[in-house]
Image: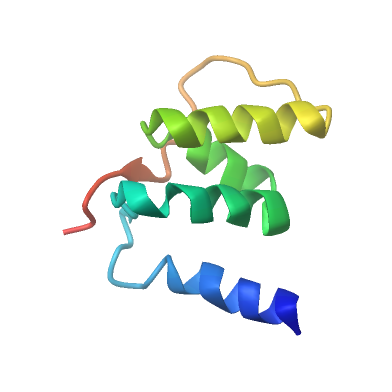
Amino acid sequence: MRSQVSALAAVSLFSEKQPAAVSGNESRIPEMVDLLESYGDTTLAENYLTCGQPDLNAAARRWADRRGYKVGTGAGSHRATWGSGK
């Protein structure tokens, strides 16, 4: 049950009202890092890597390293950007 509640809380961080931006609220960074650790995949990690927020970038690099992924440099996807979502 706890994992279901955590998943629901994580989903609520990403409302449909913010399609082009990742939160932009730095107080949510710890929860976003928890989301990556608990439910993340390579897509979410890549979004964090390229969103422009240094703490999320570092979290994604740690996530990748612990799972044996190599993080390279390049143009990236830039599917998500850090911002206000307004």
